[in-house]
Every structure is written in C-alpha cells, then in structure tokens.
Image (tube, rainbow, N blue to C red; front, side):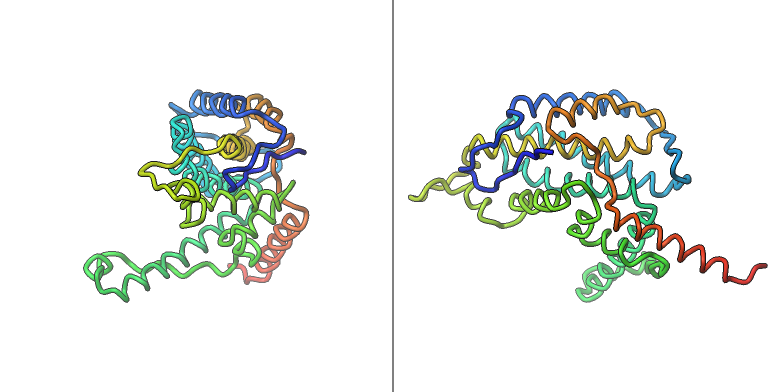
Length: 289
C-alpha cells in the first residue's frame, strides 16, 4: 500500500496521493462519524467472537482511542488556522495513543502490560518526589503503589513501555509506523523544526508567530491527522460488535491509501500465545482448595 510521507523538511514537496483538501475532508467525515456514534454514549458493549470478554482491556482501548480522537480534532482546528506549531505536538501525542489503542485491541497481554508500566511509573515518580522534599505533605496522604504484577510477559512489557517495540509488534508497515512517530516528534521536542518555525530564512529574521509551513508540510500534517483518526477508529471498531463506524472507516482508509487495518505481527501473536500457555500451565500446577 502506498503511504503518504511526512517530511520534517519544510521545503519538501508532497508525493502523489490525496491532496490537502481531500485529507481535510477525510478528517471532517471521520470526526462527524465519531461524534454521531459516541457523543451521547455512556455505556459501550464491547466484544468479538474470537476473544473472551476482557473489560479492563476494552476500557483501555476506548480511553486511548477517545484521547487520540479528541487531540486530533483539536489539532485539525489549528491546522485550519495554519498554526502548525501547536498542531504538530498534538498530532504526535494523539498518534501514540491511537497506536496504543490498536495494540491493546489486538493483544490480550495489553491490560497486564499497561498495569505493570503504570505501577512502575508511579513508583519512579514517587521516588523522584521524595528526593525533592517539596511534596512530603502530599505524599503522606497517598499510599505507595502496589508491587507490579510479575506474571506479565516480558515482550508485552516492552511493547507497553517502548514505542519502537510497540510499532514493531504491528503490521503492515511497522517501519513506517515508527518513522511517522519520529517525524511527528520533531514538532514536540526542541528540534531544528521548532527553530525553523520561528526563525525565517538565512538572514535570519525572527517571528513571534510560526512562519508559514510549506505545502508539503501542511499536507503531511493533514495526512497524520487522517491516520490518527483512522487507526483510533479501527481499534475501537474491532471491539464493537455493532460495527457502527466500519463503513466510514473503510471509505477513509481507501481515500488515504491504507487499505487494511493494523494487526499484531505473527511473532507478536506467538508471544501472546506463549504467555497464555505459561499462565495456564502455572495455574494447573497450583494446589487446589
């Protein structure tokens, strides 16, 4: 499948593919589709025939997909206003949430791995806070986090904490998925792209507001927005037995050249199966009663 390339070089010209206007229309249609389904929804029945009910994982998928959708919609407003200094970082954060939602939708290790990562991160944050002595009064009121569970498969732990490994666990085009993340990150870190936003030309001339983005960068950012909405929507669609947005998602995928949903790679599937077998074997060895 042909993928539109995001270039961090503001002089880059767009490759063949959807135009900026076409990408903007895809984003508008996916945004309307999302809100028409979820605007007044308070409960969502999730599940599919090939998976046992896992409410914790399904809630994770919904939360991350909703996060990606909300941030991307906000980024689109800034893109319409030609404010790519704000749109770029929002798209980068949304992209990470969208792909994490995809991974969590496919991997039954996701809830365990994310729980492990959150507990470890909470412990590290608490340790850092203790070193400052600024938060002692607050920390006295907050119990220490429980120990992280030890039955989480190492590969899933890596996928939950290292975005390269998460991208590597997905197909098709895992290399492109991670490269997209790296390029979007240029707008979210103190990089050369940030300098070029506020320093125009070789003179140089400084500006209080971001200098105008090239047509290539504008189109690439709209492409990133469309991919964010597509991936987040597909993650949730896989767990929605009603498939209420599937037609809209299929039309969007065809429009931007992404003709099949992301899924776990074969090696990632084997790791999930091995982890399940190990848990079942451990459970069978425990004394009953």
